[in-house]
Image (cartoon, rainbow, N blue to C red; front, side, top):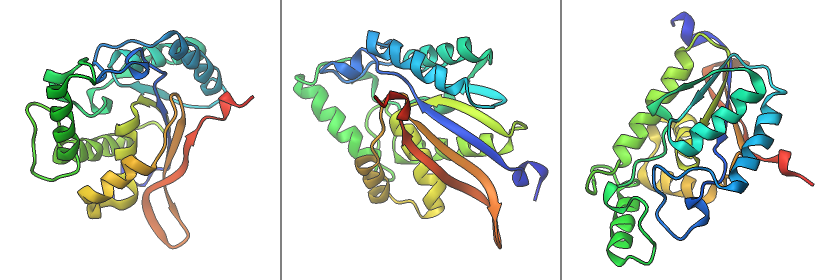
Length: 220
């Protein structure tokens, strides 16, 4: 086992703040920025993350995640590193930003959603099950092999759920299993999900889910 594979670490995954398209009846566009509410959420999570001790800040370059990461950077002084590994699952470009009322776009979206939980199926230029699971594996390996022991990652709801599913189920993850993770794992904007890479009593090093969907920073 290499040094990188037996080094304990903690990764704080932060979902981005609400985007304009999150609050609109459209299939979210890649370029959709944070809404006014989303910017306030980003400031709130930035204040909370400023209480953590962490060594690096990694973020998806998608605008809504980038803006959230920049708020965290401003509050903490940690310069963000942007990585395509942590973007949201990639939808077909033909429906990017189109209204839900568009029947053709809705059909493409439904077929694409099916492809995300059906190995081998592909719809236009969207990612499919094999792509998203493979990227989750790459992301987990990247984090495991990093030299830092404490990392904040600003990413997206479905991709964070894919990472958690892969971390917990590993190579046994099937399409129907992933579909249930997507359906049953709620995730608020700017919620924190924590994975720890560590060993335990008579157990090998592996990823362990520590916290999911923690949004206590919005408690009143």
